Amino acid sequence: MRNEFDRGTAQRRYLRAAGLRKGMALLGLTALLALACAAVSAAPPAGAELEARVERLSTELRCLVCDNQTIADSNAQLARDLKGVVREQLAAGRSEDDVIAFLTQRYGDFVLYKPPLRASTWPLWFGPFILLGGGLWWLWRTLQRQQGDKA
Image 1 (cartoon, rainbow, N blue to C red):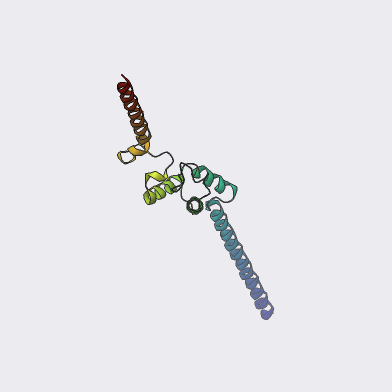
Image 2: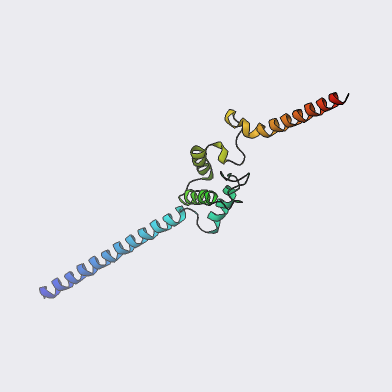
């Protein structure tokens, strides 16, 4: 009779251990699922959202080899390369400000389509007006000389 009792006790212990193993496996699976969900929610944007951010940022960056075009408007190889850099940076999870800071550090303020007003960017902001003023002054002086020669 003692043998049957011992066998029953052993079976109960085995079943209890099997239940514990199943519970631990379920707990481990739940933890893995939670980690996977956290990784998906923390993943950088993909697809249409990423492309929209790339396009929006591309309208703020100047093509370095084109005449007054953004990298969004340009078909130059350098503009496509810069757009690829923007896409890579955004896909890596960097913010738009980080991407602009990276490109500004690499290429200077000229890469910005609307550069900030600093001493180093005065030619970009005021150069066209100075050239226009100089051209108008030259035209006025030329016309004054011609009128003086006629008199």
